[in-house]
Image (tube, rainbow, N blue to C red; front, side):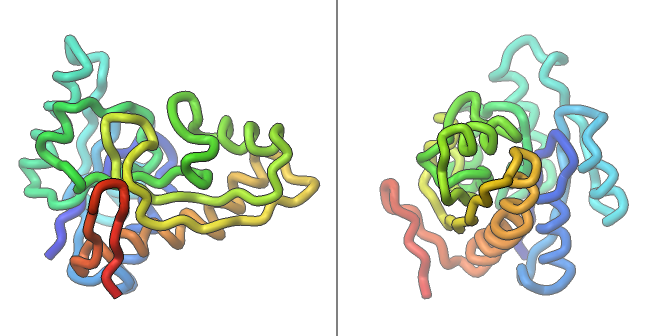
Length: 208
């Protein structure tokens, strides 16, 4: 049984996609053991509670340093014997201390085709606004393993999405979620659960 921990900050739509995929059997032999938010206002907590998943709120400002916040997160996840950590709209940068416990066991979904429009400052609607301002014709989403460098870990899966001439950041965000994010994030978790992902340098090898 793959035990998953999910870190959230906002609405939790990608969390819901993972919950649905587990409930529907798309992700086999897996359960979400805990959902941790860095804000008690995150609606993702309500999604977790409705699904009967334990929740925890750990707030950065309650710790003297980012490193101590990272350690608190890691300790909470380890207390639930978590095998895989998913970032689902988690608006905090994790430092090296966190990854000593979860190397190549942390995934994130980014709403663009990495390495384009990624890295510090590219999150939420800011990503989609930058893409439209640049005049891109295609965008998409990427699932990657997380490292201390923002959006720089090995890419697992990417999916492209066409941009429409009348798109706004809001309409593009919605379509990227529906056409890409909610499909490839559960797929990446499914592949991990089946033991089909191998990290070799910057490459993620997917066993067929």
